[in-house]
Image (spheres, helix red, strand yellow):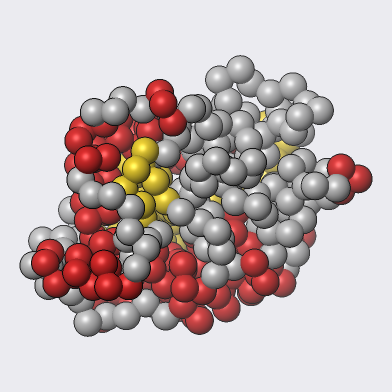
Length: 339
């Protein structure tokens, strides 16, 4: 995610009454506390288990193509790989091809990838992530590397990898609703610090803006959406994101409760985070789909989104398979409860 795309505002701007969520429970990190959550929740846990090794392998596979910067050969090849992997899992895949105009006036050959499970089902849920790489490592500690592309193992590939593993497991889970996995393109092409971007941040999230406009025009509806952004970092902690609370308060509470039930409350912490200008804004504001952004917020850190954010260190070695597992298992449980 880009700095503008994930434009963070002070956490104090989130109302202390943020729908009562912050008062639900203090943060916990011990395994015994997590087990207590599971035992007292009364939740029937799914027997389907998320395979973190499979998801990690999908991250490596994406990164093996190189940085997936729009208009590059790595971008084309990885797009083909994602399409093939969803089809191999039995999903119906469509593509939205569109030429976007970047902040620098460059024409970008964009490609949103949509994979549908149970495409015939009227009731649907959207799980989304972006799949492109940022062209500039403009937050790297070494300023000499700021114009190098980002490998984007976490900031892009991790969300796609979780979706691919979820897609593989859906026949076992057999949710009662259709699932649409959406891979947004051209999310991370926003202006670097040496460029001039849009005052409203519209030079970021180009693919999701286009997808949401098409969804609105076609009358597409979904119960809700979940956006996965940088979900595999070793230092990740997910707090309540501000726009998610504004547009999908009940879903925020449900996801964090679900995370506690599967033993992930040390990762999904019950506290306010910040506002992130991310792909979920178009999903909420344009498409009208209540959507929650699962995105890191590391309080008190110089790197709110994690130490590898927009650096040349965003590589597979810095991914936590355990965090992938916890995010994936939370989503499996969430989907298993759809009636």
